[in-house]
Image (cartoon, rainbow, N blue to C red; front, side):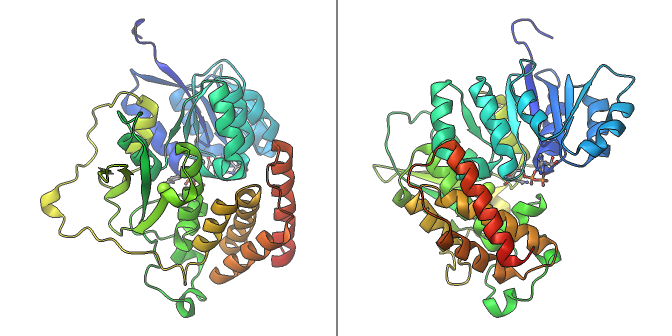
Length: 389
Ligand code: NAD
Ligand code: MG
């Protein structure tokens, strides 16, 4: 280790997922710059053990307490500490053994540990968009209070973040979030009513976890990303536009007051925004495949079909109205996606469940963190009853 440039100590919350494993690939390729100090997993003990033996972190967390013994035994010959249970995520997030949290847990479950990390002054690389959808106002306020940078990992937001470098004094007119359209672009309700989890999990451009793959297929992912953009870049709802760009080459754009538009481009590969978040403000040389403009014949752009993909309308409403509505929408969506992934409801039922939940949970204009937790719980119960989970 170079004493002038000590390694950045990384905690990966959600290390066994799609983002987590790709982050470990990036760290492995840059072992002189980063060390892995914390790894966490929900159920996947086998992969967690493998990762721990390879990267030798300070500690690991297995959320599923039934797997504690197995992980403890497997790491018995090392000095890696093993923690278990949901509460341990928050405790570990508050520890001094790391500098930078890669928040790569999926869904609401990532909120409390990420909040703890911010309260303890840790820099955040944020993949877990749901945390900002649920409690973006409180999270960003706490980040400012604690002088904590929140660096986006989501490819669209990383693109916007990169476009804004050197533009601190210039006003944004709008951001243009690009959407691939997902695997069912061009399809109509009579087709969608019959699609099953296997179809929804096959995304044309990205290989991702199950929940975000379904969100991409329903366009809820883009809805969540609109709200994510609002909080990350302090935008008004009317400054956020979604455009379908099937090739996923332009990752998103920013239009400034003078009409000038900046775009960030590249081949679709999450390793790039992950690496950028880890190394920011520097860029690191890598050998990822390069985009060759001579080989692209078309970059297409179109309006999203909101008549078919109604989740985008619901998300727009949540974005406009604010308060606890995005939190309620997110909770209902998590329940609906869970049910769809288990073949309990069909593709279009997901939107119905989300819409009814949004209509039925009491609106709170300026929720406290406690009220966000309560709204999340109420919305989950309501949606689960509706679906008869
Ligand atoms: P994934 O399902 O592949 O992995 C999720 C990780 O979170 C796993 O390590 C799992 O063990 C952990 N986890 C799941 N439920 C948990 C719980 N209740 N408590 C604690 N840990 C839990 O998901 P992913 O695709 O890697 O996505 C992670 C986050 O990044 C999501 O918020 C997603 O929207 C966002 N994101 C992902 C991609 C992508 O390409 N995969 C792109 C942009 C943003
Ligand atoms: Mg994205």
